[in-house]
Image 1 (tube, one colour):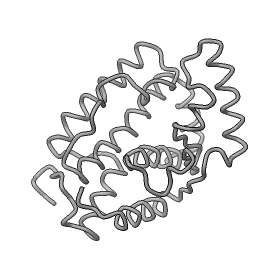
Image 2 (cartoon, helix red, strand yellow; image 1 turned 90 degrees about the vertical axis):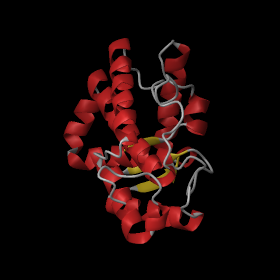
Image 3 (cartoon, one colour; image 1 turned 120 degrees about the vertical axis):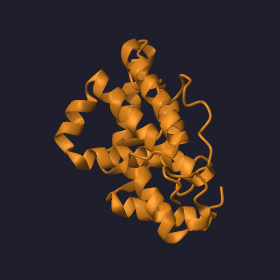
Length: 201
């Protein structure tokens, strides 16, 4: 990655401003401790959700315009791409708060929205590194914990496989990916490593 730590911080500040988002540490938020307790009980009962401790210590969560980070993970994370993923959920929320909630409550809607958010992370990471993130086709923490049934887990994997193919050809379609590209062109053109369709950088 050619982007410096200071430039990454500047990019993330610009994205938070654009999407009217804020970041809070998860353990400092009462609402997240309540969700963790519910997850803890659900995990004990066999639900496909993280344990309470894993939820608080390792999982990023977004509710409306608030991104909740694990302790010490903000402002910069070794894998800053998770922030691009979470910012997409904020952008999805602002598109229509009521429709966001009603759609996310369905397994199919959740699968499609998570795939879109991960695609934004893939696009942004591609722009910054010229590489596709490892393991995006494999089951893992991105799929585990979303309580998706088998058909919707398969849908998520299918959408991510298509994303991988098109992003490798330089196709950007998410608002976050396009915004990262525009920010890089304006503020750090030499740091844009991944090409965009048509060869534009």
